[in-house]
Length: 114
Image 1: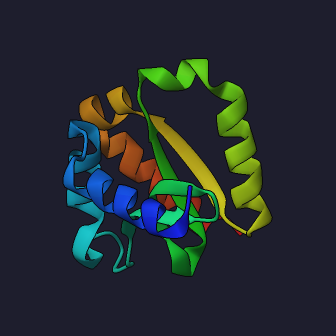
Image 2 (image 1 turned 120 degrees about the horizontal axis):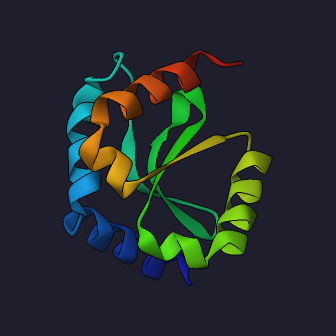
């Protein structure tokens, strides 16, 4: 995907967020979460990540049902992001929708790890 196409696609993803993404974004946006800046649908190399805290080198992915069929793709993506120095944590959409408190606790814990 060419760079301009990727930027256009990322913008479209921001406009058409899933319910799970909206719920998590409510807690992460505007420095609400531990005073940290998070961005959403950020292009990184050949990928677009769901949420990213660049200062802490943390990527948060919310996985819908389709991710069960793309385990290898997700592994390559995680390896690529790890190679850039980012830690990747994943949650299912169901987790974000039904237990956002636990998701936020796990994100907070990830931010304390070296």
